[in-house]
Structure formats: C-alpha cells, structure tokens
Image (tube, rainbow, N blue to C red):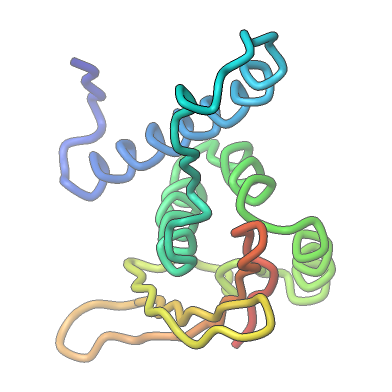
Amino acid sequence: MLQIRNAQDPRSRRLIGRTLLASALLTAVAAVPAVAAAPQAPRTPATEAPVRSDLGTPAYQQVAHFYGAYIDAVSAEDGGRLATALRTFYLTPRLRSELNTWEQRNHADGVLRAQNTPLAFRVTPGDSAAGHTWSTVRLTWSGGKHPTHSYLTVRSDLRNGKISGIGR
C-alpha cells in the first residue's frame, strides 16, 4: 500500500487519490493508439464484441470527471503538467486556445474563472441542442453557514464528448 507521510487529513488523501486516478487514466489513454495500431486477426461478424466508449457516458459526467481531476491537479504541488494533460484530453483545441487568451488577459485560471482553487464543485446536467449539451458547474469557494458559490456554464460536443466552451 502506498503511504504518503504528509497526507494525514482526508482532503489530502482524496486529492492524492484523484490525482493518481487521473494520471492512470491519461496513461491508459496514451496506450490506446498503440494497441489500436497493432495488427489484429480478422474477425467474423459472429465473434465481434460490442463496442464500448465513454461517449455513451452522459456529457455532464464527463464534465464532472474533468473538474474533479482538474481541481485536484491544480491543488497539488507540481500539478501543472497533469492539469495541462487533462486540458489536452478533455478540451477541444479551440477552447484551449480561447482559455489561453482569456488567462493572459485576466491573470486567472480560465477553467475555474478564478485565481484560487475551489473547495468543492457540483455538476448539473442541462439542455441539449444542435449537437451540444450544456452543464452547470457550481464551484464552492468557502464553507460554513453561508458558503460562497460561483456558477459556470460548460458546453460539450455530443459528437466527440469534449468540452468546447466554458463561460459564466
């Protein structure tokens, strides 16, 4: 079992667990093209297995996976490379370019639309139309009796499952 000395509180352990899970996911995704390119024996239609994909996963769950891993990555020490890898995997190239422009102008993280890291998040599904679906991400910035929240509207492409827009 992996033990980390400075991870005594549950939040730190959860952060480390999510970061390790995101790293494993990105490693597995990088291995898929190599496996797909390997020569395979021809199959007859009777032996073909059904095709499975995360694209069948509701888009808001993809958004939740991204925000969970991304918040953990930016919260972690030296999590910058993981955060960049998560952006590459989950976001469209066009959105990554738009976020870079927004971040240079606003001196803040474009995914979170803030300079800080939230304490928690929640993703709620929204409407779908014209090949897109929208989710609402609620970011929690403070705890206590009267927590502070901000809300983001996240657009996902139904065709490829990638996040294509983040706004308020």
